[in-house]
Amino acid sequence: MEIREYARSILASGSLEAKLIPPPPSLSDRAPGDALVIPSPVRDPAIRILPGREVKVPSRDGMCDPAQRIRIIHAFANHELQAVELFAWALLAFPEAEPDFRRGLLRILEDEQRHTRMYVSLLDSRCCSFVNFPVNGYFWAKAAEFSTPLRFVAAMSLTFESANLDHASDYRALALAAGDHEMAGVIDVIHREEIEHVRFGWDWLNRLKAPGESAWDAYRSSLAWPLRPSRSVGRSFDEAARSAAGMDRSFLE
Image 1 (cartoon, rainbow, N blue to C red):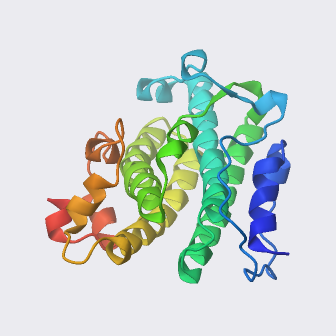
Image 2: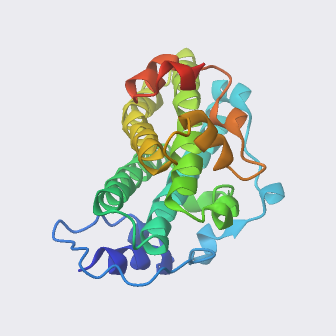
């Protein structure tokens, strides 16, 4: 099977189960084909994307309430599912990207599938299904602006996933404060793996930017409003995780 065929199957399959089938180890990339930009994924009715105003997620204060915590876990699972789809989207949108870039996209896609399954398993352990709550498409709403590989990593890796370094640290602490060690353990695993996802974005930002351009200027100019650097940071700033991802001092400052 070709990577293109596999990526397309994720976006064309409506069920959660089909979207989370890991890539076969024998995938090849000999025929990436022409660029294909898919505006939105196929979703079964139970997990269809709804406008954000129709999807209410409790604030972080809800972590102390087990019922609200389930809704927060569900929102995290939805974020990971959108990431699965968008990395598949990038494999179709950027067939001429360097082979190492495409293989990196595929590797992260598989991580995002595992993260989704981890959160869905948490829901299952609490007698809740992913289909019990509506989902929004916040990440998907920005996809039209991901017109180049550089714009893609600036948004997905260095904004959304970078912010998740902070969110993960914060929510892990909140889960521990609530006595939910199971949730804290899942978040801890995902946090460590997100560092490598941010590293991927950082490495490719530096490889794709114009010669002589600073990483900071390249990052800023690759974001389309309303995305901006401030969206890459949560309430806290996990500097250690970003340093572990390779970000240099001038960029961090």
